[in-house]
Image (cartoon, rainbow, N blue to C red; front, side, top):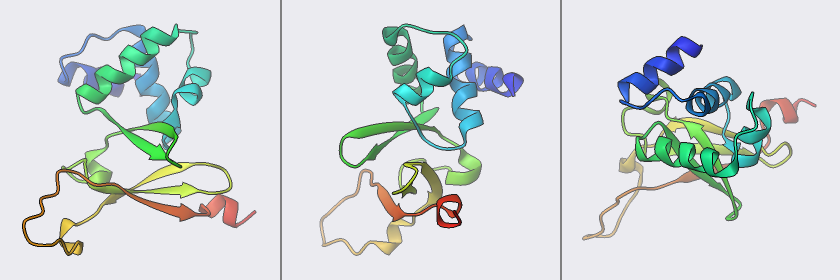
Length: 139
């Protein structure tokens, strides 16, 4: 897993700092979107808040991760995965579990499904489904 993380950083022409490697490994291993606090709690080293913030900002700026706004006040982060989301990272759906709070990337959503009035232009969009994930539903 660490080799793939290092490849991702190399492909993005980013330095392989310990924090960057650690954050990417954490997001890759999680498989769900994580809050900044969730990420910090799972890191191997206790990086200061500024270092973690700069790392997340760098990943956002380089399109390695994306933000998911949950309940209008909580931001979570997830890896951009072209194999799941399609090549266009903006315009994919998320599922938020009301019970466990998990946020899962579902995949691309077609803009063709939207019936926009004439003259409107979409720059980006977010789709959030709420309910129970399979694990919570079965428990």
